[in-house]
Image (cartoon, rainbow, N blue to C red; front, side, top):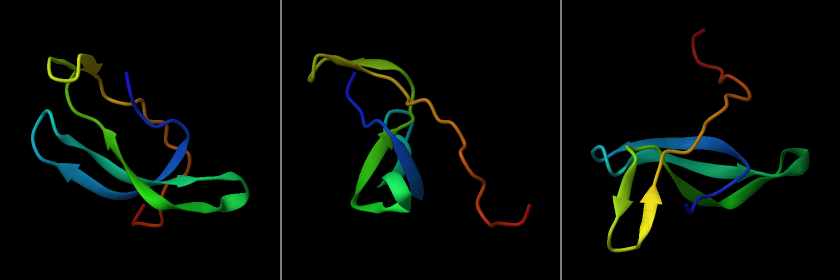
Length: 71
């Protein structure tokens, strides 16, 4: 499996179908620094990609801090 590891701040939610949905996130580093690069984090269904020869599985998400939206 390929994918990013670490802590990310959600920038955008993306839903292009069951095999292309996920979120775009900015990686958080120590002391609150944010990366200038955004990454696509796959959240679709599990499936085997014949073209790439690997399995695509959704990332595991843990909520670290709730946003400032209406609670």
